Image (tube, rainbow, N blue to C red; front, side, top):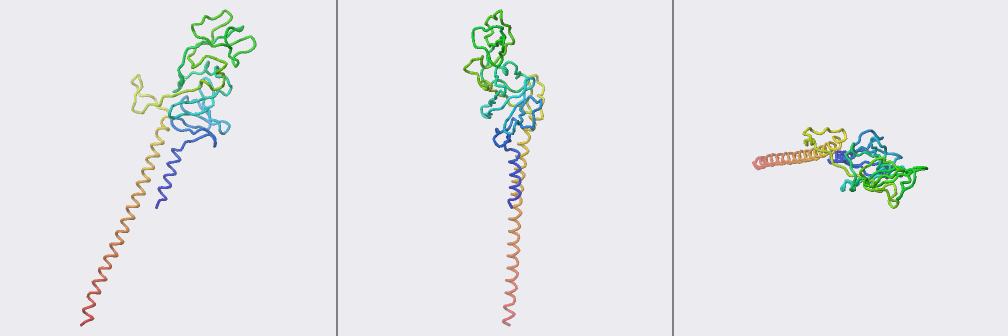
Length: 253
């Protein structure tokens, strides 16, 4: 009797259960999706590398490791596999993605200097004969330096904050609903990723609802069958009783 319900319940779990990269990977759920390999979708597509490692690909930059995801706080913690956070800060363009930095950002200018100046140079961007620094835009550029780029990032370089993950926290805006319009009054284009992450749970819910309805219908039919069977037995008993009552006077005559 419960076999159809169990089947549909397992099917429901298969649609809603979080996926992951290997047995030790992060739980991946909406709005993120998991693909066998990276593509050029700048939205919420993640992919697996080396079985248990979860990766994300950013257009015009490259790949970063996903360290953790907090769905309640909408925080994506990343690690630079090249261990150079400030190379990420310098080159990552989040304007092409639904992400932005989780921490408050400030403007910093990257300087490339031919000789050392006051402050700590960024080791992973510096080399023989050139030294790279982050300074506030208001700082006058020394003659031995040239400005590379001014960007808005969470932190300037500090030797105390030089690991490969500090500051690489991103947050995101949830995709708009299909009935919402963009700021320009034109309905926002929906990507396949957005549609699948929204439609699959709804379809799974409908499947579960249909399964529950099927089980209830089967139980009702079974109950009706029992009632009809009992009614037939009562009618047969009444007929037998009447037949016996007719036989008694005949036996006395």
